[in-house]
Amino acid sequence: MSFYGGVCEECPKEHGISLSKGAYSALKYLNTAPMDKIYRLNINKTVKDEIAKITAYIINSNYSKKPKSLEMLNYIKE
Image 1 (cartoon, rainbow, N blue to C red):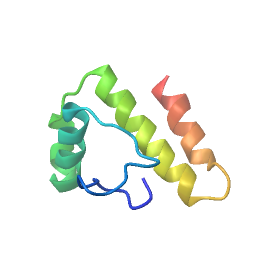
Image 2 (image 1 turned 30 degrees about the vertical axis):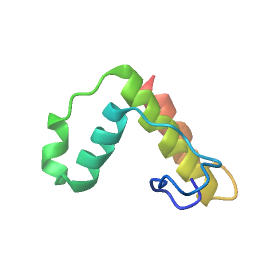
Image 3 (image 1 turned 180 degrees about the vertical axis):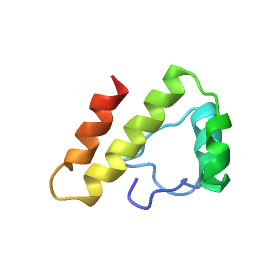
Image 4 (image 1 turned 90 degrees about the horizontal axis):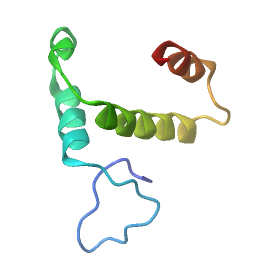
């Protein structure tokens, strides 16, 4: 996760997070879709949990302390 991307076959797979094909496809769609089309995306709970785990990891690794907005997202999600 050091570079926030995929890892080739020759690179060491250290500190990575495995993704299912569904989560990868959803992230790929979210990356390219315009904001007004995102509501069309239907994903199951396991894919949502995978995406939430990765998003939380990226947010936490870029800030020295956990932002309160991340706690708000978790509160809203419940």
